[in-house]
Image (cartoon, rainbow, N blue to C red):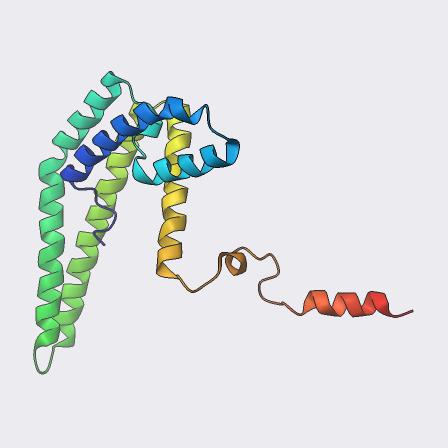
Length: 183
């Protein structure tokens, strides 16, 4: 629920990481391709903001957008926490009322929907500030973060099995080999 929300402190740390990555970018040009790819992946994980190469004007507009929505973001997050707490309280009684629990669930769902609407609205506003190339980089970063989350959620599930084209029927290649072997 709150894992998609970026706190203001995170923006500052991202800005610092952007600066660090921008200073290390020229060094990547003189490395071996494998080394450069590994280094790029590591910097990709460390500082996604620096890869956008934001202009000072873009940075200023994004900061202004974040400041505009700060109060609303805090209000919505507070409502979400309160809705979660009230649902927990309704469930913690000895004999919870189904009507009350349903009401609290609806309140929580409304708070979550408001948070998602706010996050998406903020993203669309930020994307309007970016160039098409920066948007492409941002979308690549999002896909990379999504893959990292999947890997962390399923650490014992090998990557090869996740992307296997014949994932459901692993015996099919064996049977095809047997058919070819027959005269």
